[in-house]
Image 1 (cartoon, one colour):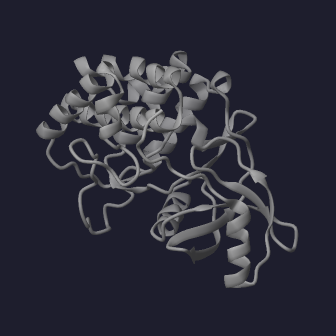
Image 2: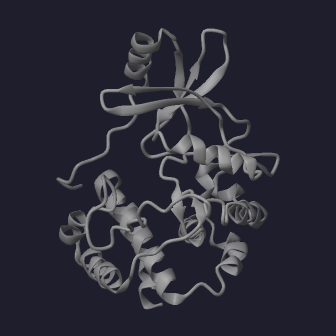
Image 3: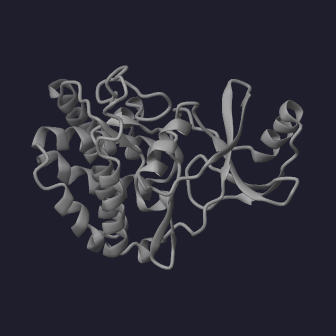
Length: 280
């Protein structure tokens, strides 16, 4: 759909070969985990244990430890290796399955809002290195690219103009909360209606926890708008300028990614979600 770069999916077979060369541990690849844009894979240890292979950052482990101590179900790190400039991790396989849009109920969303509340103030004792960048005026590192929106069509170009306006008017945003940065129903695991895991913490950082609620709301508006009540209520009172900045980021992120990795119908579907937020 575009000449802009696509992000490569996880090559699990090659990675387990390299892990064996580096660590001596020989995993067996079972297949891809469901969901996700870049990918993760189920692997078996030599003793038969099942785990999850993915890429990650070195900072993620301590943040997951904090979340787990606060009562959030997160996977424990079991092995990591640096392979060709990337950090590859093997994590505990948590119980449960990713919900579908049809099974993303208001009850599940309410649980997700409660999980978000557990992460508030969790990083207040850690030094703030630098404010998080929302990439509203410049490209992000492999996501939130601006050029794809310029040349795609009039709707995307108009949306990008709004994103730039919001970015120019938004000062640096900080916070003391542990923020997931991709918090939506397809990054939780559920068993018999109960959340058993929160996964894919690769972008986790210190920020304003309401960002995760806007992310959740943005996804729900497309996949199950009938279930948005709990998150809408939790976002009551957020300052309008901060809400616009978070909405602008989500609009840019989802539409840029869809242009580069999906079809016209997907781009239009996310535009239908994003555009009403430009009037707030």
